[in-house]
Image 1: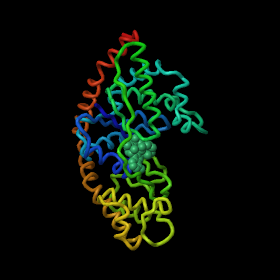
Image 2 (image 1 turned 120 degrees about the horizontal axis):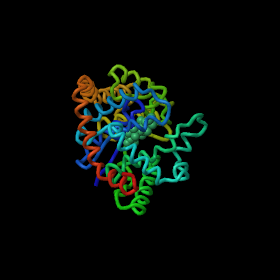
Image 3 (image 1 turned 90 degrees about the horizontal axis):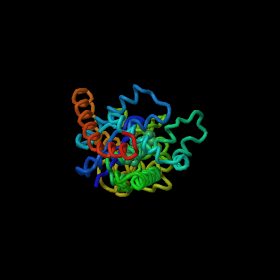
Image 4 (image 1 turned 45 degrees about the vertical axis):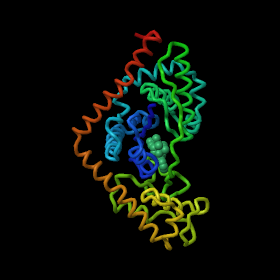
Length: 321
Ligand code: AQP
């Protein structure tokens, strides 16, 4: 069983990405799990090339520093040639209607002028990511389920039309994890691509900045510290973040604090101490481009080799080469 998970470098990796996913990947990942920086997926809307390159490298350094084995990691664009070829084969297996039906496409394209064609076709690139590596399980949230279903459909169609090449993937629900919300607007999830970063903690933020962001967090009305996600989402967010950093349950932690100030101080301290080793290790690794380059090249070679027989067979079976 191979499980594949990606992080898109659409911004700096956040506390939400860390508590919701990366921390668990590092603690529970097995030798069958694969992780990748999906930088090609960050190009479906207007992007800055230099920033994309540096965010992909930074993201890779964060994943390694968080404890994910470099053996299980790669950067998507390092195998762009293989993925490009397989994406084309899969696009030739997919109808326009199937791609245009994707809810994410409809939502993201709505009201946008000059929508990139890649916004329509990126699910076929995602299918190539999955099928090239032979992933059997893809842990995704509800919003990406439809794309994994499309990858299944295309794998099945290819296998029955041309010959058995691809492992059938399936979407699996990731284990429940706290959804970290934006500190300034707890109705939104904390996102790395947010325009306003006042409510977004990046895992590489300096301690002072983390402290300021948390102390300015929206905490709703009232003065009593209670855990009530429906009525007091801002407060609940802080309690869930504190619980994510220290263990414990949000409700129990609420009982330990009588003022918002005390809860905010405890949360700031917990976040700073949780992220400190990660920030220090990442910054040290970023100072060593030769080591990062070595990890990238080795990861790319493994990812390419893992998929080589599938791509070669698929090309041969469709009559191309
Ligand atoms: N706020 C969050 N709380 C908990 N988990 C989160 N994840 C993302 N945001 C939160 C989890 O992080 C992993 C990697 O995310 P992704 O790169 O696949 O993209 P995303 O889910 O779309 O994350 P962002 O930060 O919100 O990016 P943008 O701004 O580009 O949309 C996933 O496992 C995700 O569940």
